[in-house]
Length: 176
Image 1: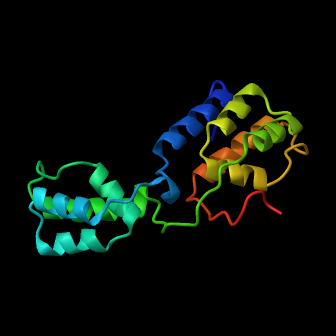
Image 2: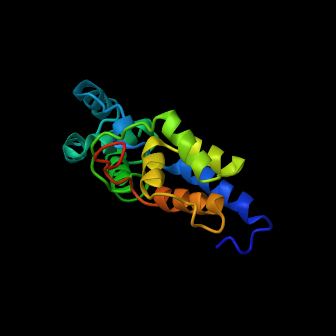
């Protein structure tokens, strides 16, 4: 709750900023590792066959998260460390989602029109502009904020809710 914050708007902006930094890249933004990169990682870290097979068979975005964490050489048991990284990527930081259809960039004109039509203040407009495309699309798809007592606060609430859950597939843009 933001009730304990001295400035609820600043608290909300801070939470959005923190959530944006911690949100895993959407699958459309992830450059999946190639077979050579995976095999080199397995060899460099001297992984046992069970761990190597686990890495080879998980989804590409999970492989990318595991490889991006760097070498397992510092682990007492690198193979166990790999299994732990895979589990963590599938549960927590990776939100456990499988790759979804591509996320379409919100055209800047549509984004600016939405912000203008809904009377968003500078802070809410900046937060929306700086949000990932899949978040922008979902905020806009939920419709007008003009019926809100404070449209800017309504926008911030949408941003927070959307970024707190895994991305949903976007079928097309603009929504019908």
